[in-house]
Length: 114
Image 1 (spheres, rainbow, N blue to C red):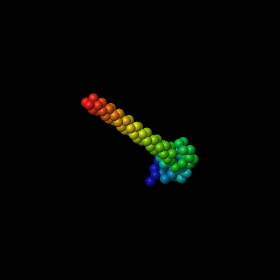
Image 2 (spheres, one colour):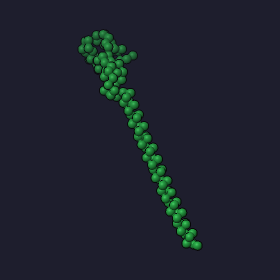
Image 3 (cartoon, helix red, strand yellow):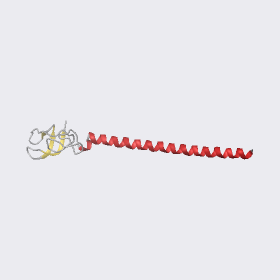
Image 4 (cartoon, rainbow, N blue to C red):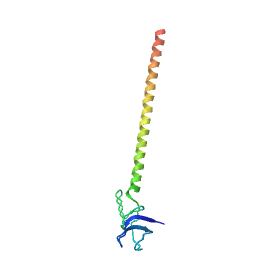
């Protein structure tokens, strides 16, 4: 059962409810757009995100918009991973520098003991 409210019938021009695209007042069937949750009385629906004419989705549910969001999240994740790798490399360089300093210090102490 597909009941809609808050739309204006193009046949009898009354604001009322409809069920399965039939006006409760005049009982005329009307053609409407394919977009779900659309409460406007029109035959085609234009998606402002992807530009589809007579689209089967609302702009907020556009597959292109969802794809762009997934791509944005993937890019952010790659940036986080690159920053983590850079941090690990920096820590490794610091560890190696400390190890070199300790080795040099031990070498000078060994030579001084001779």
